[in-house]
Amino acid sequence: MAVASGAEPLGSGLNGSAAEGPQAGAKGKVLVVAGTHGNECNAPWLLDAWARLPGRLNSSGLALCSLIGNPDALAQSRRYLDRDLNRSFQPALLADPARQEREVVRARSLLAHHAPEAADPCLVVIDLHSTTAAMGNCLVVYGRRPADLALAAALQQKLGLPIYLHEGDPHQSGYLAEAWPCGLVIEVGPVPQGVLTAAVVLQTAMALEATLALLAGARQGRLPQPTHLVVHRHRQSLDLPRHGNGSPAAVIHPLRQHRDWQPLRAGDPLFQATDGGTIAYSPPAGLENQLVWPVFINEAAYGEKGIALSLTSRERWPVQPSWTEALQALTSGLLQA
Ligand SMILES: [Zn+2]
Image 1 (cartoon, protein in one colour):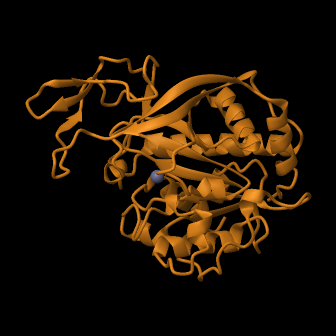
Image 2 (image 1 turned 120 degrees about the vertical axis):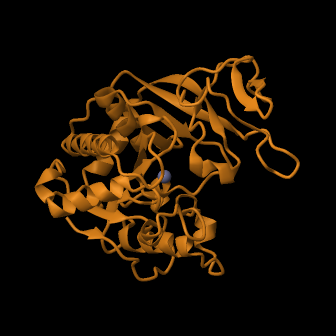
Image 3 (image 1 turned 60 degrees about the vertical axis):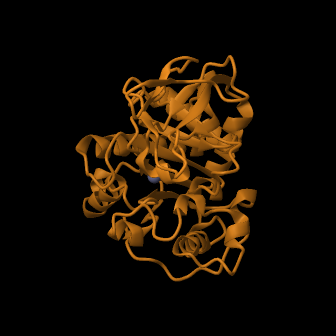
């Protein structure tokens, strides 16, 4: 399995629209991306290990295209060089020839080479990330595409993973996984940025191999589905309290640190002020009288985005037959290794 390590030639922009989905009967691989963020080194190390010992990867017989999302940033152990690659897959941004930030150029290149209608077509993308937050092993799904939901439901049933459903946030968009007809993020934490950890590598490998096994089953018309899918639906994000000059006026309260996926009620300790005093959670507008479930608490990379944590609603959705049909139709085009 080849792992692309260098930046590819410049692409010529969006080669059609992957979001519209491939034509019926389209054939393609599963795209496995590591190092979309260059300071998340565990998944890139895993891909490199598999490239050296290909027999160690159980691809379930599917043809894979594995690559490093942002190799130049990975070489410098930086999240990104000019802008966050995982916020750069915005159609308007990619179509603007005046935008030449390195991550925009890279996003164009990835699509030009690996979109469903490109020379090395891929139909599904699995984007491997790690986080400094205590998220455990979880999935991030963007929006409500039926094929994504079917895959997430099957994975939740198989591995019991919690799911963060990200939608309705105009300040955070342009995710890589959204740029292919089906895709999701496997997120593992907590792990510091730039630190290799055996447990994180193992969790990443297990979740990816389980995903590939489910895709291979779906390709053959066998996709086990639970009756319900539990999602933590994004509602809004909160920043730290800040002084007038923008510096933090409080930290995450020690009783909330590392408590991702655990309910937060009005009056619960949320922040700790400079004098040691507790700042309690007060529901923002729109979330009054609602139980919320924080995620990505104190994620290191989100400080610059003004996000100390994100609030979600825990919801239980009936699994729809149309989700399964969408995923099986798409995966019927997956190529075998
Ligand atoms: Zn990441």
